[in-house]
Length: 217
Image 1 (tube, one colour):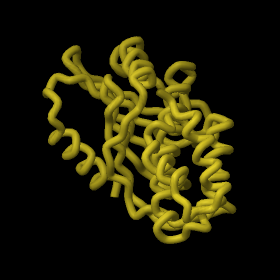
Image 2 (cartoon, rainbow, N blue to C red):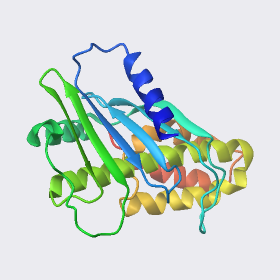
Image 3 (cartoon, rainbow, N blue to C red):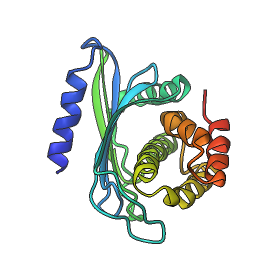
């Protein structure tokens, strides 16, 4: 499945209207204990990008909802966030460096950061990095992926289980408050829909309004 997902991501990348020399950063994440267990996030300097994952069943634990079969969509992040990503790549030799600590720490998911642009290309992989900037970037892109997958879950619940939006929006508010979810601008569309939809619970609309107020510009 991982090979198929990478092939799809590369196909999406190759069909973009951008020039061949346009800088691009791609994040490939895998953790069998999570849902989705594998995703690929592509980011361009202007904040545009693409997110691709494959659904793999129901989540375990207390927060269970209808999982998207897959997420395959263009996304928009803030230029400020994109600039952080590319500045980190530049400061770390285009990711041509050893970034895994090789320490015996809890498995947080395998992150593969890759850069390609006119200056060259590079790749580094890590579970946990002793380099503070690399570690923080890894945590940030995982938070972005959470936001995007939560947006897809909200869309599914809206169509198949509107009452389930209550728990899911409550979770998203909590995740936004503690930093587990970042770049709410990537799911602005579904949040605006929920805020304006008279057919969902009023507290769902209120939470959507709260989240929109914290959407990054």
